[in-house]
Image (cartoon, rainbow, N blue to C red):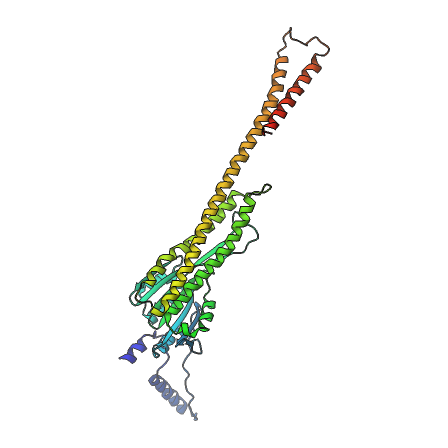
Length: 382
């Protein structure tokens, strides 16, 4: 029954011909050669090699923390891993389609809901158990280099990684350009003592990698905030409010990746499925995540302060402009009032018939304007 169950794990279309089928094929070809008058030894029929789908980044079998040579098909790798007590398969996927994920779910006996969850992107950080499989979702992040902050600058690019941990296998499904797990695999392969703890070692390494990326992105964002703060309080140039709002939107996306991971890590540390030797490692990840959360929360407060300061500066600038406009309007009002009085064409007005009347009125207008200008300048309105 065990041999039958292993044979049924592989789809019929992908299963190579068995020994009995190869024997029948050899007999059939031998009969054809005899009928055609040909003689000679019959060559063996090689078993066809099944390539992994394009969505498979890497597939490897690990026994006692050491990777076995080759990159087998995922269904063959699972059978190989089950033959060893300390063996497991690490299957890495990048944006698989539904057909590929359905085939993988059949080979690894995953729940049907896992297919839709793994194919879709944009999941919130979470941890849940579906049967004997633990599903851990992590958000990835990547700092996008830019020369200057604009209203459309992309600062943080995010994606997600789903880690499916079961008996003798771990499957990582990544969506988006951020959060490549090739460095995680290379680092773990250099630590066979850690990798010997099984599939949960991959879960720890993925969590640790994501938290390290959060801290690295936070360092770059902190430099952007320092430059933005300096320009916001600079006397000559001030940033546009749209730039501040753009960075604030990027920080909201970054915060959605970092903050929700606290609760899943807390639940993992209390789960019975987590191997006891790995609990200190996950506790260290939770501590580093707390530092990342504090920094992101501080960024949000600093951005709010910069935004409020910039809005206050805009109000002050508008008030100053209104003062200047009112000051010049007051100066012009004096000239308008004098000109309006002498434009009434009364017969009896002082200075109308005097030789010095016109120069005297013009001198009065200039003196009044100068006095008002100096007075308004002294109080800071001009």
